[in-house]
Length: 68
Image 1 (tube, rainbow, N blue to C red):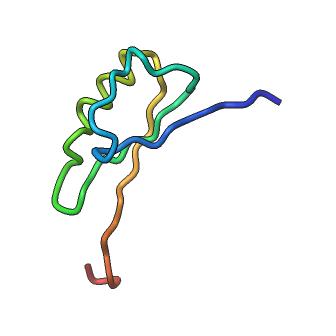
Image 2: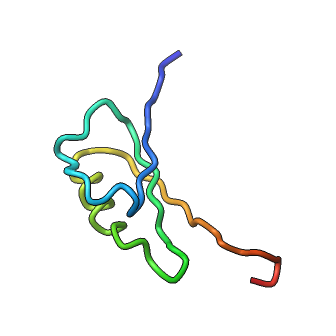
Image 3: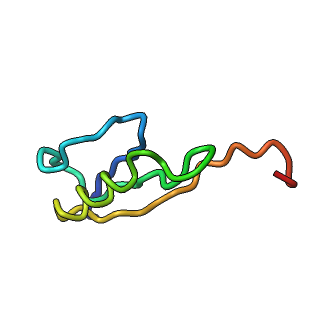
């Protein structure tokens, strides 16, 4: 069975130099923060795809109830 390695990246990781990222097949990027787009999402998306790394995204939720 083939193994795949991935990383979870958000603004908490700053702005990685994606040309130096090695050993991963994919990156899961946080697309939203509490109030809008994750401040490093565009940098991370562009950098990862330019480096040939497959990308997935996730939305982190701060909801306290079903209504919000």
